[in-house]
Length: 249
Image (cartoon, rainbow, N blue to C red; front, side):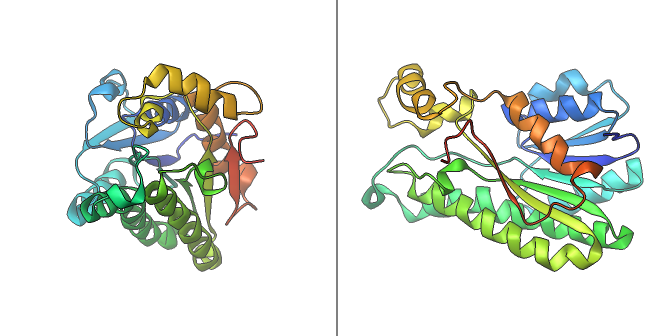
């Protein structure tokens, strides 16, 4: 499963899943471009010649274009895109969700994915190859009350991914969506209701909902992302991969 000379762009690289994915791909000798609104957690990778970081808002079209242009200038090509960037939703009744909050969640989870995929397609079509992995959520299959905006946004990511896989298949570009289950990251605590104890909720609500009996680790997601990017997954496109310890059953 060689990634030598392959260049992968990872959005949301500063978070738990993103950082684990960056670290794993670098160990596999890939060139990795880590993008996030804040990149302080990526400082440890800065001294590696195979790593490039970008700090900025990925809802800005010019920022997205700049990232892809500089990636090609630095590494010569783009082989993969991993869209991990996104936001959670605190469990809230629908009548209490403002239109601004709805737009924020849809933009961060879906519009940002659209912008990066659109740019990736331009470069990947030129080489007639590439792999895109979009991160969804097990909540699209097993929703929880109060997360209607988040679930809607991740459901959109799944449908968009399938449509894009069909559209880009003549160009030999594979596009898949990975639905993580409850993972032991900072983001998990953001799904709790205001006032709830985060650690108690993680144990009582999220961990207990996983048939395998434990929360996922960021490395569990990173390993699955690596597989979908690899040559071993060349005939997998438009697929939904649940990495959730059985939560989706």
